Length: 118
Picture 1 (tube, rainbow, N blue to C red):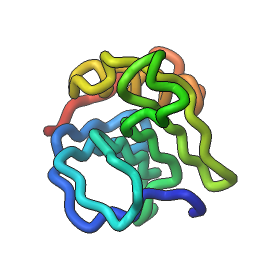
Picture 2: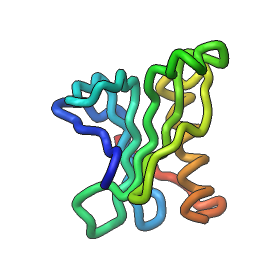
Picture 3: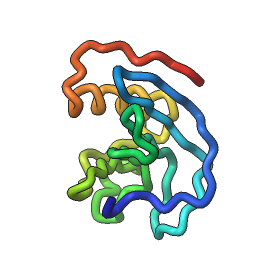
Picture 4: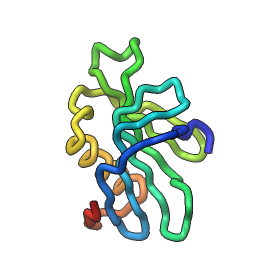
């Protein structure tokens, strides 16, 4: 997958089961990217070994810092895009709630409940 995070080390902070998907939120991330990641949410379909979607919370580009400190970047197999900037996403719970909302919407899971595993 193009633009995926190149993670060397990270600690799992949250895990959820959502339909046929496993969602893992990582923190304390070290990567070989030039990106300053705060959080990474990876979405893995049951039976797959690699995430098919990532949502990252990373330091906002300088050109967007007047909107907030943290940028949300959605990474899909066909590309990546910053979908918002906000100071609040630096908080683990706020990022996780927003990530679950985005994943439900993109995967058309409606009101399906996410079950916290970790």
